[in-house]
Length: 467
Image 1 (cartoon, rainbow, N blue to C red):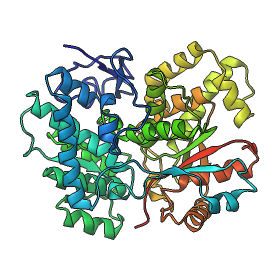
Image 2 (image 1 turned 30 degrees about the horizontal axis):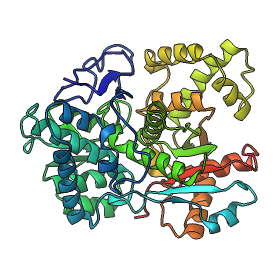
Image 3 (image 1 turned 30 degrees about the vertical axis):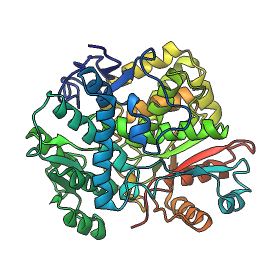
Image 4 (image 1 turned 45 degrees about the vertical axis):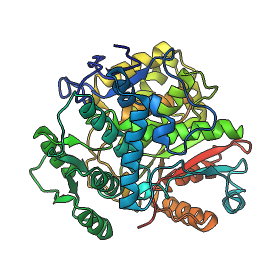
């Protein structure tokens, strides 16, 4: 059996069986103080990156890069059959939502450039996900999982799971995306939401047939997000982790990476090289998927590099920034850097550290999770409510991306989040919400502090429509 993809736990190094029916999480998950997250690697000798033209549906164009596709092919599924599967499910998605998956636009907006010209003279490139299925990038993750499960069933690795529920914990975009894909897929979905979830989203979830469980924070309950605890109970009871958290379903990154693959292709086709990429981070799957996409493309021979990655969080909750600071301090200590010095110069010095030093510290971090990542102590609050996860579940992959690219986290205040959203909506005509424009808020923050040079080209993601 040819294995063009390999599943490996980033935390403990365990290699999962290639033809596992449920390759979602590491079998050792929960064992030790280890950050168990399953990821997949590709064999460059057997896989190519589509660099020119291609199908507008990203799940067709980039299919060779998905573990589910490689699994199906190795088990006798024809390429044409896989493409038919994508088109069949995509057609059902279009019936539910009014449109299916297509490549989303990347470009500059004259109004935004004019408005930000004094602080970002190099220009801003916006990847607009607001017109995607369910109004955000989240449906990419869930479509990828649905295709993987369908492949395991069609090649006989798993029995039909029509009666097996799907489960997700979400306060908005992810839940809505899951409900759209689940309805199109004709699967039952259990959604665990907080009591303050957007009423319009809740109404849509109910209309799409999702079963809703409202999860309250209460004294005496475990720390962290009660919605996530409810979700975990459902998964432990047999539900498919139909989610955007890598530790619970590492293959959710496959579908999410289509956004990054598109970004790589669009930049290559336009001849643009971004110097910085600002990505809003809650649970972390979006940023993790972007890191994966650039690294995949580079490994497969595309002349591209990950821009300086800036993970943007709000002062309401910034667990990723907290974890990064501790790891960066350890590396900086080994390099003899002044711990009081912060900013771009420090980040670039960390980037220039010997690869062995960085890898040693990342390995340490992966086996000392509780010292770096734990639930936010207070109930987080922000206008950017979609990035208020108590933990950044895919934190280690993002920290790696920032360290190796010379980027660093940006924690923004409420005023900057509002300012960025107003600037983004008014100057581009894109009806993005405050969560979706948080990346632009991070760019504004660094620019106002004089940390973006006049010649730098910056990319941001508008990831969620206003509801």
